[in-house]
Every structure is written in C-alpha cells, then in structure tokens.
Image (cartoon, rainbow, N blue to C red; front, top):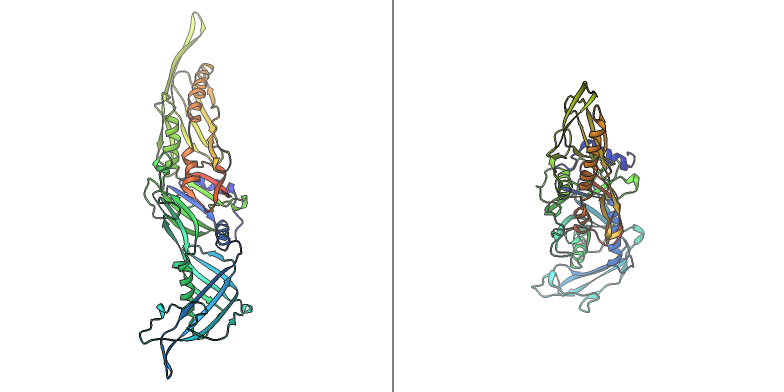
Length: 464
C-alpha cells in the first residue's frame, strides 16, 4: 500500500493536470472514516445513547393440518444489536453494515387457525395469549451471531426541506443475512425477511450528506441542479465517497481524474473542488469587472496544455518620446507599447498575473509584469469565508525611458489592477461549501484554499 497522500502532492497534481474534474462542475470528496463518524453519531441518537438497538418480531408460519385441527407455528425473537460497522467498497455504491447480536432470546408455539388463514395477517403480538408457547431459549452469543445487510446508497428528497436531496443508507432497501443463529422451523431466508421488515417498519436510515438545490447564492453556476455519487479506493488504500455535482453545466460521463483527492497525510478528511470554468468566469472575471476600470477581464477556455485563464482587454496603450544629447546632436527615441496580462492559477499563490512584451518604436524596451494574488481563509464555523489578498505588481523595465515607463505602469497597475482584484468576492463559494452542501450536525471546516486551476478547498469537519 502506498504512503498516505500529502497536500503538496494533491496541489502538484492539480496544477500539472489543470482540468481534473473531467467535466463536472463541482466534486465533493469525503473520507470513509468521517462518514463512519456521522453514522455512529446517528446510531447513538437512535438508541438514546445506549449504543444498543433491540429488534423483535412475532410472525406466523403457514397453516398446517393435524388430527386435532388446523394450526400454525408462531415464532417470537428479540435480538439486542451492538454498534454497526460500515464497510464501503471501491467501485460499488453498496455498503456492508454488520451488527453483532450481543444478547437475545427466542421462543415458538402453536396457534389454532381457520381454513382461510393468511400468515401475513395473523396479528400476533409478543407473548400472545392465543399461542401455546414453548420455553424461552437464549441466543448463544459465544457463537458470535450477527446481522449483516447490503445497503445501497440512494438519494431521497425532502428529508431536511423540500429543496434538499440527501444521500442515505435506507435499510428498507437492504438485503439481510443472519449469521450463526438458527431458529427451529424457520429458514434463514424467513428470518432475514423478518429482520428486514423490522428495519423497514422502524424507518432506519443513515444520512451521509445533502445538497440543497435552492438558489441561496447569487450565481447559477454555484446552485446544484443534480448529482450522482461514486465510491473509490485510491492507491494509498483510502476509501472515498464522492458527490459529483452538476450546476449550470451538463452532467459528465466519467469520473474525476484526481489520483488522491484527499491529503490524509496532512490530517484532512474532505475536499471540495470547483471547476475552473466557474472560478475564472463567474468569480474572477465577474468580480474584477465589477470594479468599473477602463479594461475588463475575459475568461479563456483551456487548450490542451493548460486550463482556464483570464486575459485583460482592451490592452492599455502607452506611447511617447524623449530626446537626449547636445543641442546640436540630439537623438529622439519613441516608444509604443500595449500592456494586457494573463491571470492563471497556481498551486500556492492564488491567481498569478504575467505579461512580457517588447514594445514598438526604437526605444528597445523589454517589460515584464507579474503579481501574485493569494487566496486565504478567515473566520470560523458558519462565519468562515475566503478572501483574496492582491499584492502590488512587480514591474521590470529595461532599455531607454525605463524610469518613465516604470512610473506610469506602477501607478496604473497598483491603483487599477490591484484595486480590481481586491473587489473579487468568494462569497458564493463559501455559501456553496457551507449552505448548499450539508452534513449531519457538521460543517466543513475549511483549512486550505488554493487555485491550482480548478479551485480546491481542503478541510475537516466540526460540529455545527
């Protein structure tokens, strides 16, 4: 088994491969251990903190005939189950749930019936006085009896509110087996069916995560419209449940191509990835252009070699001339340059601005502009938020008139570019992470946010 993956490994892969979501608008990755924690907390609540669940059934067999009249065999059992274990399998949406039988008893008896008797409608109750009961038999817990179920992950609507779609393990849909328990006159299938009936009647289900389809944010690209779930086992052995989310795009055919989507070696248990199409179009460009500057930022679709970027247009034109030399031997130098710039994602420094040009004229300048615009997290709990912290651009001008050109560019870039970047809001991303995506009694605790191209939020969970 490979070593546990690090955050640097994940950021490096995403920066190298650029578009890693394979067409999905957003992907949530949750480690199996966190889901087990959610499930165990729900079991504890179901059992009023006792950590034991008692299931019991009374059921009748078919009508039998004897010289003394028609009768049926009535079986009664009561099993006390311990805490469940949940095992996810990569490549399958079915979860194996096993609960040990820590104590239990059973008894059987006979009950007179009429000729039209139907077992399903016998109406028997525990210790029914119509039944001639045999002695109570205790379950041999030394044989390690247990109840197991194969339960598929399914989606239900309205469990939290009318707009919420929740991924659940609904035991009404489970396939049950009982291990190391034999009841006289009862087949293993009959016993399994009775246990399934109990779980279905009592509405036992476990919530994994929910997506709220209501438009709580301000942009459609961060409002879920549909999703599907997927279970993978990574090369390091981690089992990860994924929610593959569609917003204003189209459902994708394949799965994301991230090898290790959660950096468990760095102590994290979940990640949220948002498509660079949304990040560059609806967050970076929309926020930048809202600053009312004389130029705008436009998204650029990915080529084969890189993911989404954004470029400045119209480019700013700088032109002028200067002279030097004696009064009788002066030289006039002209310059004409157009400066734009391209923003791209980085593994550690947010959005990176870069432009290198050689202007027209006879000045012979070379101009390079670069700037980091890191993203960071502030606040805690439901008040967590993502902020961009634009840095002053670095300008390198070589050749004639370098001081003049540098001064003009530095003023414009610092006042206009840096100011426009400062107005970019990640409020809709925060809303999506904390309000559209819901976990049982927990919030995502965001620990790291970066934009290697697709946006990455890395975190753990904290009680809500």
